[in-house]
Amino acid sequence: MKFNMDKNETFIKAIKSNERLIYKMASIYTDSIDDRNDLVQEIIYNLWKSFDSFHQKSSMSTWMYRVAMNVAIYYLKTAKRKVLTVPMDGQYLNFQETENNNFEEKLQIFKQHVDNLNLLDKGIVMLYLENKSYQEIAEIVGISESNVGTKIARIKEKLKKQITKQL
Amino acid sequence: MMELDDLKNSWEEATKQINIPVKMIDRATHAQYKSNLKKIVYPEIIGSIICFLGAVYIGCRFNELGNGFVKGIGILAIGVLVVLPILSFISLLQFNSIGDVNKPYAETLKDFAIQKIRFHTFMKINSTLCYLLLVSLIIVCSKFFGEKDIYENTYFWILSFSGGYIFLLFYSKWVAKYYKNTLQQTEDLLKELES
Image: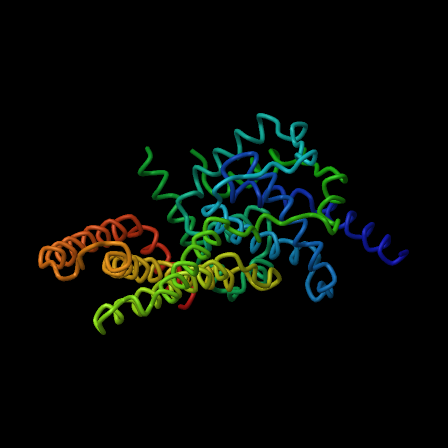
């Protein structure tokens, strides 16, 4: 019982200290606030389920990024097949306090830039913007460090071309 | 317009206020939380039950099918009625399975791309099987409920084969057009991941 309490507290602390990364990941992979809240919940649920398998081989945030990005992919897959979304009774997630106009505005600008990228590049850009080192990006994504460098250079080039086209 | 590096600061600034309520974290850690990712799709289950009942019905009245040709068509109908839901369930299981969320992102993307391509193949097989089922059910039902055997009518064969062929042709073209971009992107992504 005490072990469970400790585990619960440790988990809550871990989530609280990485809450921004979870929310940001969910924002990038979804198009509506409802979907975003659903995805945040799914990410937390999956982090909790695999919390025991985290053996500190990597840092807590690296592990969380990995789980969050993988869950986002599964979410995208099932969201397309969703016929009906059942609201979670009495458990509707209230993010009104945090969802200020500033965030939504910046999110739209960000999405304008990255929505045309494929899922691999999107993930890499997201981690790059999170100030992750090439080594960390390589660890989360599962490609070599040199490949990360090449891809980031290509993505920058792609975005530049995209912007020139828009102008 | 900003460039990638300019976005960094702007993004960082915009996400400073984010706060996930403890109540919400607590909820996800409780056993009764139901993940949306494992949702069972009821239309597929109902469709499968109807298919199996159809197969059982034909099986029960199999001796009424008369000559060897119609019996062969009956076996074909039973076969398709059994295979269709099995294929549908396999495809559903692949779609609904949540793999290891701890594995690297690139591996998940690779699995995702392979499943997407498989799903497209499944759609093609499915439409051909549906057409075969339609023709065989018309013959079997005409034997069960009709006064005359429809398969003895030459127009039936001309219409069902030529009509069916034209339908399959247009349907497969529409499917190919509909999925063209998505499939191309998926194949490109797969190539990139395998390189």
